[in-house]
Image (cartoon, rainbow, N blue to C red; front, side, top):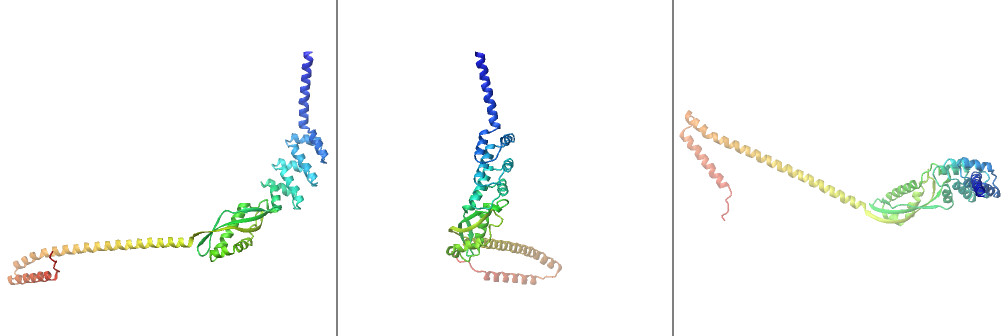
Length: 326
C-alpha cells in the first residue's frame, strides 16, 4: 500500500512537471486569447518564440492592440525583429495607434527607426498632438546703452516626426533661441525699447528659422520675464577710468624716478667738478713756488695775486645772504 501511494505521488509530480514545461513552451492560454481577439497565430509560432527567447505575451498583446486599432500591415515577424534589435515593441505599437487616431503620417519603419535611435516615439506622437512648452534659463543680454537685461523665455514646440532621426534636441533649441534673444537685444538702442515692446524681440527671433535641423517645430517664443540687471556700460567706464588712473600713476612714478636719477647724476658731476677744482687749487702753490725759483714771478706779482684773492673773497662774502640772528 505504501509503495503504491509513493508511485502515484511520483507520477503526479512528473505529470505536473511535464504540463508545466509544456504550457511554458506552448502557451496555450495565450494562443486562445490571440484567437479570440482575431489574431492569426499558431501554437508552433508561439513555441518557436520561446526558443528564440522572445517574450510571447509582449508580441501577442502588441498584435492584438494593432489588430483592434485597425493596423493590418503589422506582422509578427516585424515585431519580433524589432524586439531582437533592442527596440520597445509596446511603445512603437502605442505610437502607431495614437498616430492613426490623430491622422499623423507615421509608418512602422519610421516608428521603429525613431525608437532604435533612442527617442521615445510614443512621447513624440503625443507632443505632435499636444505641443510642449520649454522654459529657458535666465538669458543675460546688454543693449547698446550698456544696460543689462535678464530674460526668461517660453518656447512652444511641436515634435517634427520626420526630423526625429538625426535631428537636434531641446538643448540646441534653447541655445539657438538664447543666441537670437542676445543678438536682438544687443541691436536695440536702449533697454527701454525692449521693455516697451518685448513681442518685437519674439517676432525677430521667430523669423530666423531656429528650428532648422532640429527634432522640433517652434510654434511661438514668448518673453515670460524681463528684469533689469547691471549697468555694464558704467562698470566698463569705471574700470577704464581706474585703468587710466593706474597708467597715469605709473608714468608719473617713472618720471619722478627719472628726475631723481638725473638729480643724482648732476650732483655726482658737481662733486666731481668740485674735486677737480680743489685738486687744481692744490697745484697753484706748487706752480707759484716753481715760478719763484725760476725767476718768473716777483714778490710784487705775488702780492698782487694775494690782493686779488682777498678782494674776490670779500665780494663773495658780501654777495652771500646774511643769516638772521636768533
